[in-house]
Image 1: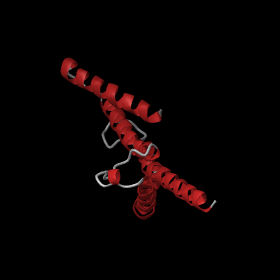
Image 2: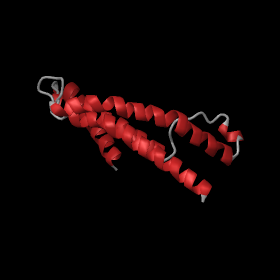
Image 3: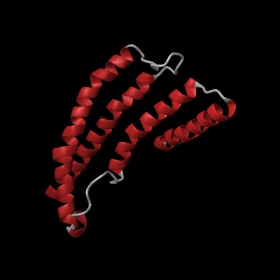
Length: 148
């Protein structure tokens, strides 16, 4: 639902910017920043949604010929050996950036732009945290089913 709200802000904000710029001859930096902030949040938060919906990118050329059990095992190994380390490193490296952004309550780099860039940068921590939590829950759930 949140991602749909961000998508609406991106669509209508971009539409408003184009109409204002080309029909009225002026634009507002605040709308441009709002579109940029909403797009960044949309991209960051939709990654976790795609993991949850099992719609993330994978090469399905081979998967279609394999059994469901083999595909589950490959997904489990991919989550454990690829996704979990990558998103854990993302979380570890993004935290200092977000912390310093919050310390100064960072705003738009543009003069007269919107404040609150620190909120958007928080998505850099929320994204990997949500994916790591999802993967751990999925891995421990699979282990629990296997051993019970």
